[in-house]
Amino acid sequence: MAPNIFICLRNALCPLYWLEKGTRVEGKVSKSEHWDSPVPGTYRFIPGRGWHLIRRDDDEEDSNQTPVPVVYCRIVHRYLFASEMEQRCRYHKVVLRKDEDAQRCLFFRLDDGFTWVIGWDSRGKFIPGPYRKWCYDKETMTMRRMTSYESSSAATSPSTSRSSSIA
Image (cartoon, rainbow, N blue to C red):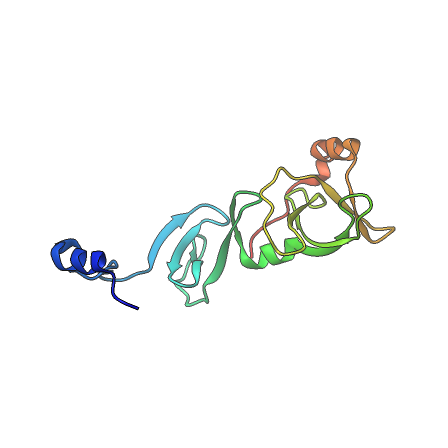
């Protein structure tokens, strides 16, 4: 295949194309910040690995503990510990539409402790919302849609306080 004359002339005559592309990073790449959530402490961004909790504010001594990974949850719009995110996610088979087979979806448990939403479909694609509320039925051991009565009583129930998210 013959070279493109336009590209050859552009590269030869335009100084913009003489220099290397890309950005150069000087100094250290990781950066540290102080956050109040999920727990107050110092968090560090490690390239290729994401954000990690390095030191809590309530730690008296400067101990060399392993960094705790933190991930951003797009469902509740805040950072959670990776271990908490894994605890809150479960796969269940549900029928989404009549006359269709059951699909295996990844559910995410909300802060109240018993309300679930479908966060990812059967192919693993994130669903941005709005979300329908689901609950786990212990009698049938399946997920079912919440009724409007259950949904409204869940918001006003005093037993729905958020459990501790400290890892």
